[in-house]
Length: 164
Image (cartoon, rainbow, N blue to C red; front, side, top):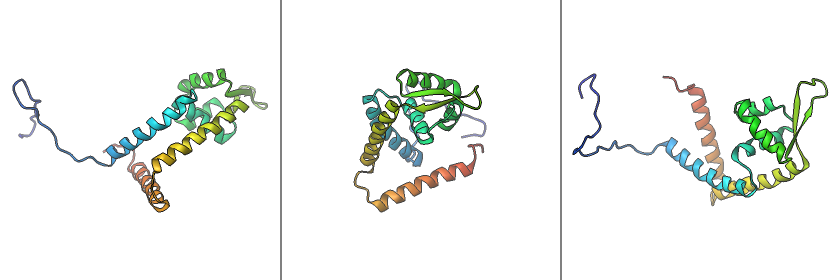
C-alpha cells in the first residue's frame, strides 16, 4: 500500500477481508475473567449482592472500619459512585456509619452483625468459585499460574500507562 493511503472497507459487491491474528495473552485472560465472573456473580446474585457491593463489603471486611473516601479509594472507584452502593448496603443493614469520636466531620463505616454473617457466606462463594476455576490443577500448577499472572501484572505496571 502506498504511503499515506488508507485501506478501504469492502464495499458493495466486494468480498470482506479478514485480518488473521492469533489469540494472545489478553484474549485468554479476558475469557478466563469472563467465565470466572459469570460463575461468581451467579453466586452473589443468590444473596442479592451486586459485584460493586461485594467489592465494598470485601474491603470493609478486611479493614474493619473505613471512611467512605478510604473505602472508595481502596475499591478504585469514585466516591460519588461508591455513595449509592454504600447507601444500598446501609438500607439492607449490612453496614453502618458511625461518627468519628475524634473528628466529628468523619463517618466510619463498619459491617453490622448481619453484614459479617453475609460476608462469611460470600467468602464461601468465592472459595467455591476459586475451587471450580482451579479444577484439577495440581498445587504446583496453581502456584505456577499465580506466579505467572503476578508477573503479567508486574510487567504491565513496569511498562507504564500504555503510552508509546
